[in-house]
Length: 122
Image (cartoon, rainbow, N blue to C red; front, side, top):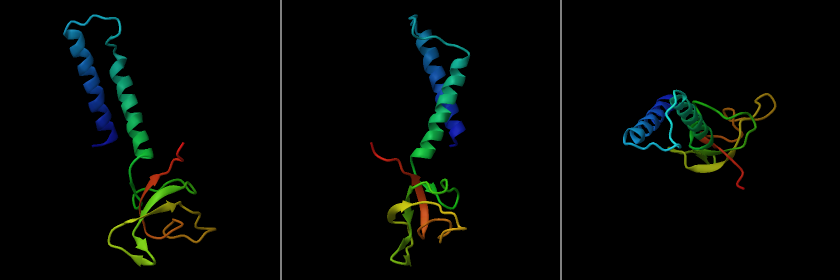
């Protein structure tokens, strides 16, 4: 499911729940149905999904790469110079400028299969 499809699903659920509460007789001041509620919910859900993709989860290194020199956590399939059948080694890595650095398919270390953004713990 794409981020857009998931955002539409969440926005529809918000709209349905709000409508059901009002139809069941709740007439308080806190719940109002506005024409823009769906759009606001959709935009928020889409931003949340995009943030999740950027911050959490593994990205396939063959499909996308992080910005150059941004430190990320990587899974590699190379250990002591030998290629493994599955990526099992976790380390830090980054994309390098191929014109000024030795690189392994654009990375500073060989065998990167997946990567995830790294955020410094607080």
